[in-house]
Image (cartoon, rainbow over all chains, first blue to last red; front, top):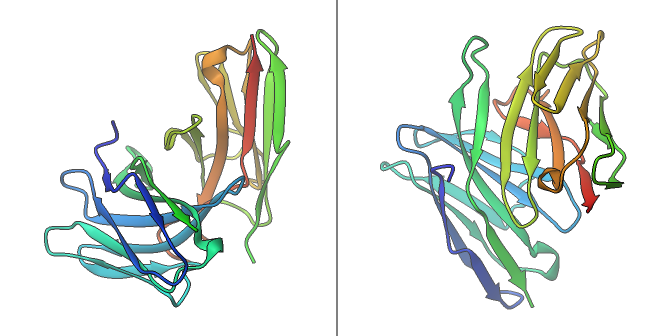
Length: 116
Length: 112
């Protein structure tokens, strides 16, 4: 158990709909990252928040948005859903690596989104 | 743009055989991390390499960072069924964002 909590685990919806994915980082972690993993694809970075502020933005579609709340949980909103949005969406928080100061990621179990 | 390619994309081995996955970056990396994702699971951090030519071992796993810091490898000796999964390398995002850019991954299947 990574300590990162994601809900729901599965989501089935129709094209054109809007969904919200929720993530709670590990206790004490201020950062939240969102990644998308499509079938047989690698991990595509979407967006990062740090202590409520957007810190970095990756290949996130305009139909997608996210926010981080004062209690540090984050939500990823996906709207006008298309078949191609079907994927596994991971949330992660991070912690400093001893000695280097770089961050390592702790991933949640993911939300499997199926758009029919 | 930044690219991190891994080869092979898929590898099937008999249990007990060795396995190696190679990670090649289009740019020099300050460090590289490796993650393992079990089938149906989430990526889990394995290790970080920082120095040019660095070699680190974790039991049957040997990680190496290239001299030019543009490539890395993960070698598993005498694979076991517990080694099944997808192995990803990841480097710092070159855009300056404080996130990781993941490689394409190598999916390992171990045949008992």
